[in-house]
Length: 206
Image (cartoon, rainbow, N blue to C red; front, side, top):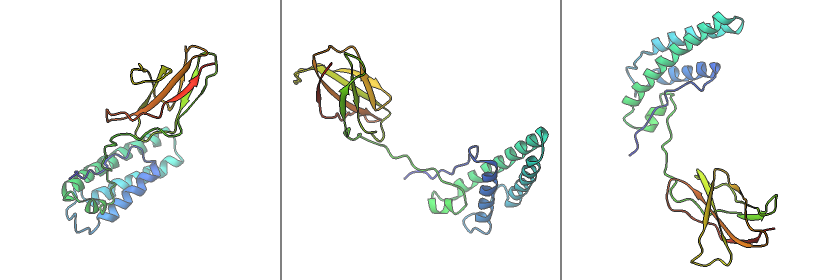
């Protein structure tokens, strides 16, 4: 069973959104039977939020000094909320429903992607210059990169495939022999070592 993890980082929240989130947490934990003794106390959180709201309001019409005060008040509020989030995580009985009743967000459990799917809409076209081919497919979910391979036709079980790697789902082969037919295939690369290749497409190089 996966461990419930509470999100205790608020760095990505805008100033107004942090105020809203802290209010939601305070309201959600007030008289919440799952969390009877919040640490820090809700009074401390409310006090830090009030100081933050005042600094946020002053900063709207203020200057550099008011911005510094606002940033410091934000750090204090974030630090208090982080401690409160750790308390929630330690007392939620590893239950997502209970944890979410606190107003905090919960980290999604990562599910292994496994073997990637076979490439779809795989195409091979003439490249922009003589001796080149362009290969492409639809995006493969879970792929960190792609391998594109080529070999001279005819393609047999003894054919030697030459791989080229790319972070994109489109790849340009250069330095091929004009007038020669090549077999092209590709696969997505993910966390699983097993590669599922596309069908082999044959193309004459111009």
